[in-house]
Amino acid sequence: MLLRDCAGGVVFYGDKVFLILNEKNEWVMPKGLIKNGEEPQDAAIRRVFEEVGIKGDIVEQAGRTYYEFYSVTRQKPVCNRIAWYIMQTDNDNFQINEPEKYSEGGFFNISDALDMITYSQDKSLVMQSYKKLCDKIGKNPDV
Image (cartoon, rainbow, N blue to C red; front, side, top):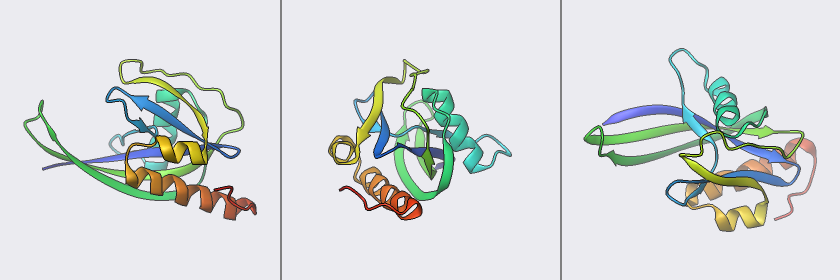
């Protein structure tokens, strides 16, 4: 099995979280491979900016997720190990920079985002991240 280390951002603008719709029609968060010698948090910031043009500031680590799939091109199973970071941005501007991978995106209210997100582990990650962010800034979560 091929193990790939990745990093991504759970990006918040106020009480909204950023999601993108991928080519498999799945609502996900921006993420990507960590380059050799790159720190995971730097990779998360880079991938969020490369994929959707958002400059996010890391608040703290959100957690990790793992998923496995069979790569037809590599002819072997792959496991992506993703380090997630809670990020904040000061505006809701974004630009999809990889239209071959993503068709749309936006900042969504937490309750709407939880309905939209495809994978249960991503739903849990967003909910936990929102609660951590609210604790950090001294706010009651609106969910």
